[in-house]
Amino acid sequence: MSIFSLTICLSCIILIPVDAYSVSNVQEPETRFIIKILYLVFNCIVLALLFGFIPFAWFFYESSGIDNNSVAKRIGYALKYSIFVIFIVVILIIVGTFLRSTDDIVGTDPPSIWAQKILAEGREVSTVSFTLSCVTIIGYIIWCTYTAYGLASLPIDLIKGNKSLQQEKNELDGDIKINRIKNMDSDVPLIADEERTLDTYHKRKEKLERVGGYWYKMRNTCRPIFILLGIFGLIVSVSIMASITLSVIDRILNHLDCGVKCGLILKNAALFNPLDRLLLTLSNYFPVDYIFFSLIVIYIFCATLYSIVEIGIHCFCWKLFSVRPHHTDPQAIMLATILLILSILAMNNSLENIAPIYVNYGSQTYIPVNGTVPQSCSIAGSTDCVMTEIGFIIHNVDINVGIFGIIFYAFNCIFLVAFLMSLIMAGVKARQSNIQYYSDEEEE
Image (spheres, rainbow, N blue to C red):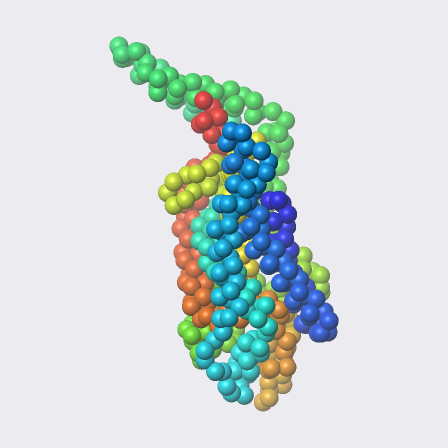
């Protein structure tokens, strides 16, 4: 179920380049309708998994510890406790269905016409857009913590690499020697905690002996490749941050006249955005842009997953689970899946800041009334341009409920600060241990 859930979420994002290609080159109503249906189906499946199947699987597994429980009783137990989560999403769907902007948008200027087109979308778009936006607010918490840390930490850890085995063995030998000297100087017999500490040291040393085999030698041989991947990843991470920063500034300087009421929607991208411009250039050679876009999405996904493994699953300051090879609890896998789904939903919304023109209009251009040089399409540009389906979904909730756009804008600002702090932490922290993924509980 975890693999299926993540595949559906990623499929919804990787559909964006196809959406951009269709408005740039095809523009057939049948193709647009198919893409719209795919977005709605994928997003509905995500909501069903997030609010239905995954909670049901969680409670079904928890009920296995209850004595004399048949499968039917376990199903009843899981349904009983899952119904509350299902009730929440039903309420969101009902509110989204009937929620419409109370402001009448009139005018013949391009921004007003675009707003009217967005509001003219069917109620199914408004419903899905509103429900996803409510869930995406939670996703942005994951985006600003795990994803921000992962984008900073993953490339730097690849560049730094792990400690050498000999260095780590020497450090452990020194710790063991210090403990022995301390205990020899004391007449008090060893207490349980001190004995456990010494035993942990010895077990770690045994693990280090086992680590120094074929895979360790192969990893050392591939160090130049890891360093190159780390440098490339760091360039991508910094480029993502630069693009988000420029979009955040651009939205302050060039937003629609309705301003905060419609979520600071970007009217016309005036600042140079590196990733946006690169994707627009590559879109002329489809599917090169599709491959590049997919690599960025997969990189962000891997950075988030790396962060979850590195930090563990927390609820504020309390650590709930560790994620370790061959030692991860089923509940931890389900929670990690939920965190990844939520981060993907936030990524889906943030891509509009990473590449605003590409995501909303693809490579479409128009010639201004009093000009001869083609310009990239925008909300303030020609109404002859065709907005992507993902653009309609994102902006629908911004116009209907402007507070969502402001919240997402604020979270993107927090994300930039979190990335900068994580980058400093990743730069000053020591190199990783070769046995970092063995928890103390396993060693005991």
